[in-house]
Amino acid sequence: MPKMIIGKRGRGLCALLFMHLVMLTMAIVILLPFYWMLVSSLKDMGEFFNPKPSLFPASATMANYVKLFRETHFVRWLVNSGTVSVLSLALGLVICSLAGFAFAVYEFRGKTLLFWTVLVSVAIPEIVTIIPVFRLMVSARMIDTYSSLVLPYSMNVFGIFLMKQYIASTLPRELLEAARIDGCSEFEIYLRIGLPLARPGLGVLGIYLWLNSWSGYFWPLIMLKSREMMTLPLGLATLYADPWNLQYGMLMAGAFLSTLPIILIFLGAQKQFIAGLTGGALKA
Image (cartoon, rainbow, N blue to C red; front, side):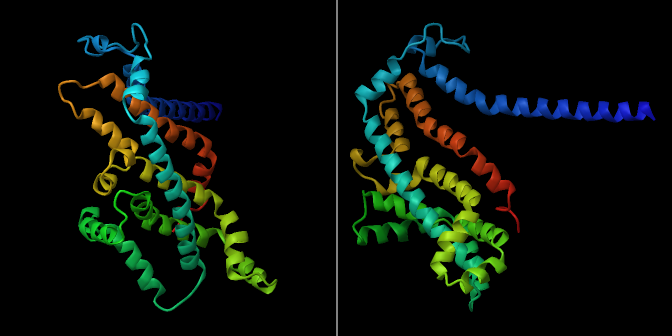
């Protein structure tokens, strides 16, 4: 019997070690490109093209970062991306939470058909809707404005589905009825009861919306015409404009700085993100 207990403990320890080994390997594979990007941004051009690449810069230099801020419109691109992402995030949270709350709480004619119509729209490729939406933006004179980027990014079908599932699984019917008996209006129920209970789901949705708008490239490429309105992905792409004078170090510096807000936001909202994934947001 003692040998059996030790054997089980040994197998459990081996399984634990194997799991940690797999997680460590995955972490290295995921983090290595980011580390390589940081190290490359600290190298000069001569070391960058050294046929024997090194994991550490021989003489770290900040020249690439200085050139990035002096010779490009990086600050302007950063402000544009930040503005679009914040507005898309705020508007997207409001729209998706309101739509999700309505689908989760209310019963009305055609609800199932409408919900499935919304879900099926995910299967429509983005390229199919480009021309109609572009013509709509031209008619509304929104080309080359923040509105042309914010509105499409804030209308998110996945966000509506996520909030519907989360609110349906966390908001009990008895609490709704009690609030109505106490005289709360429907909007007060949404604001004071629905949103606080759905906070982890909102955290997950917020990170998703932020990433979607911050890293967007194709849609801004269609909608923006002037250099002053360029977002970070578009601006960094212009550094490829001269194929005979590519500044790889400066490009790596810009790419590294553009990932910092994403990393900081994820670390700051990590608890909300994990709670949202494990607390019911993905329940059927």
